[in-house]
Amino acid sequence: MPAGGDEVVGYATLAFRNVAHPDDCSPGRARYLAIYAIGVDRRFQGRFVPGTAGQSFAASMIVAIESIALARASCVGLSLWVRSTNIRAIRFYEKAGFAMDPTGPVQRDGGPPHASMRKRLPDR
Image 1 (cartoon, helix red, strand yellow):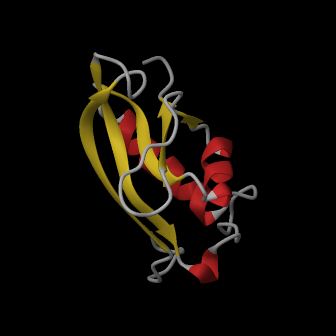
Image 2: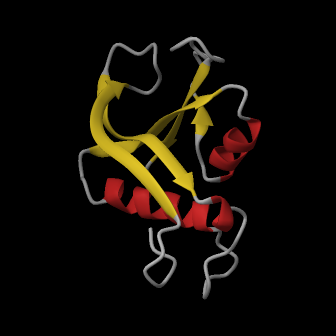
């Protein structure tokens, strides 16, 4: 994501997936835009996008990702995994409208458990 010029300030990897819906224990599935990785260069963390009403670079990335999801009529929301110990990231995602999956964190590798978070798209 360029910072108004040619400097890249962030990145994200995404894919549309059919996942358990509305939570990880559900037998039904629905289309979500899964965020596999997202990050903002340290130099831009906590900084605001010029010309916005106080929108951070990180928040602008979530808005851009959500617009991709909204363009796909079959998509019902955004989903991601976050380490349950990454309180700063969890608070950011909650502020952006994500909610924790009620099934709780799960062990995915040798590190701290991962929590599933989702953001439902409006009217879907």
